[in-house]
Each structure stands twice: as structure tokens, then as C-alpha cells.
Length: 89
Image (cartoon, rainbow, N blue to C red; front, side, top):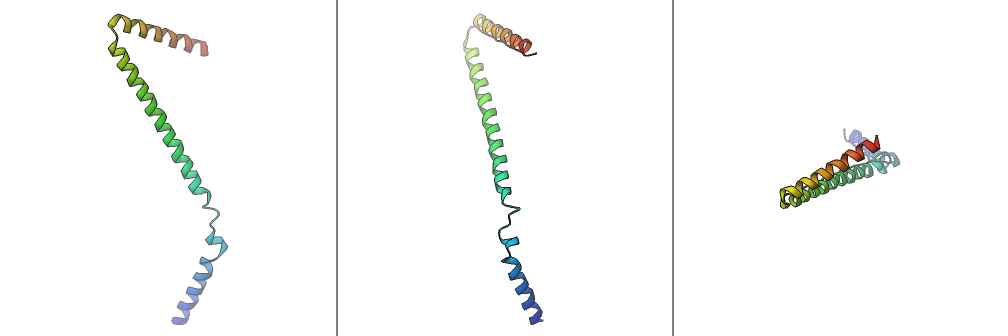
């Protein structure tokens, strides 16, 4: 039994030190891929957060305007959006 365990240990040691298992070249790109995916997700979150912040600030500015001025600004923005959408089609 001791002889068998010794052989298994030797085979395990050889396998552990094998270049196939020690370097693990197939798994090397995995952390980089995961890192890139995380960076892409973080950039998306920052972009969404920035857009939400800009929208909130615009809403606060519009809320501070008197009703006639707010209506003019919103009408101008709607006209610009409609012009831009028809120009891109």
C-alpha cells in the first residue's frame, strides 16, 4: 500500500510540475478577458450615471424657470429634436 501511495505521489508531483499544468497557457487570457468585461461594464455604468446626472440638473434648471420661459425652452428642444430625427432619416 505504501508503495502504491508513493507511486501516486510521484506521478502527482510530475504532473504538478509539468509545463502543461504549471503555466496553464489556456487560462492566461481569461483574467484579461474578465478584466476587459468589468471595465466595459464600469464604463457603461459611468455613462448612464453621467446621463442621469445631466438629466437631473436639466430638470432642476427647468424647474427654476418661470412657466413661459420653460415652455419656450421645451418647445425649442422639441423642435430641434424633431429636425434632427428627420434629417438623419
